[in-house]
Length: 256
Image 1: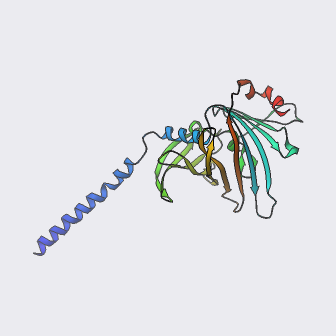
Image 2: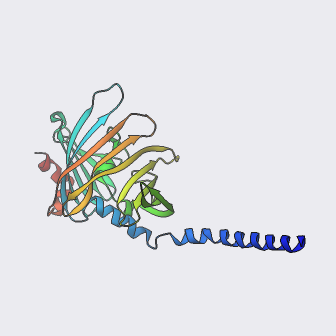
Image 3: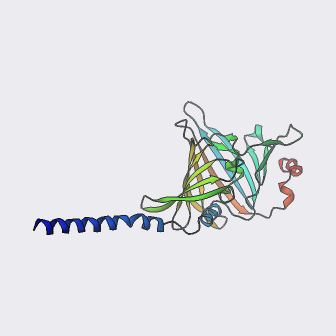
């Protein structure tokens, strides 16, 4: 009798093991079929792929310091051409960033020639030049699927984005996008040494330029607790932008 019982238990245990061994296969099956397309869709949710104009106000706060407020106007065309014009404070009026592909220059009213900058260089608060001038995750990173996470009842694909070269803003990004429609939820940005630099949450979705997009980004410093920058986007509209706008020779006209 004991032998029969032991045999039954052994078979039951083997059945359980077999069932559990199939779980990873189910998890792998949950991986989306076309990761680059998901990242590209997420890019287009944040910003149109056609020419557009948008205003951005940035409030940067840090413990023991007054809030620093700045405003910019962005002209962008196809994720490869962007102009960022400083509109406030008045003392910086006329400062312009020009991005073509991954090359970035700044024009200053009191300097004759534009100066070359890096995308990762800090612009203000927790905001790097590339955060405003370039939003092309699909072109700058190779995506890998990590897992599906459920947050507040919603399912999100967690993607790991690896930089295609050292010329991009961040070496690595962990990126949460909603599984149902690729809507961005949050991101973590890492340095070349794999150190977490800052986090970003995409908030306050509203209709702009014909689509529902995040109108508020909250960037928090991962190394300095309490330091953050809040970006508010407004007045987005589609705009025909000739190629001459995105040239160094045209910068001075834009600042006038």
